[in-house]
Image (tube, rainbow, N blue to C red; front, side):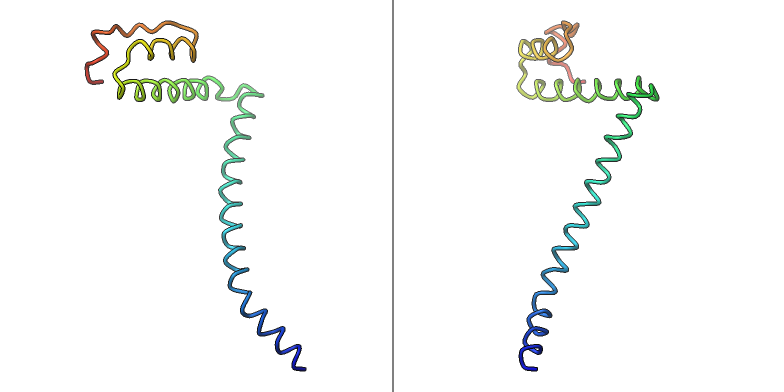
Length: 103
């Protein structure tokens, strides 16, 4: 009898920790599920040709925006040109004189 009471007491003491862990795990699972849905929807677009052009445009825009923002801060036109060639396989048409202008 005493032993079962002790077990119940320990269970009540551990239970809030388990509930917190379970809550965090469910939140993590929700985030992973949302990411999985995004990845699978893009995969399906690529496989079946749905919205493929839009997805590619968004990807190119995201990469190019990141390049411009990162090299604009350092004001390094030559490294920007090299990064554009490495990422897109083309030379940039942005001349050095326009590089310092605000966009």
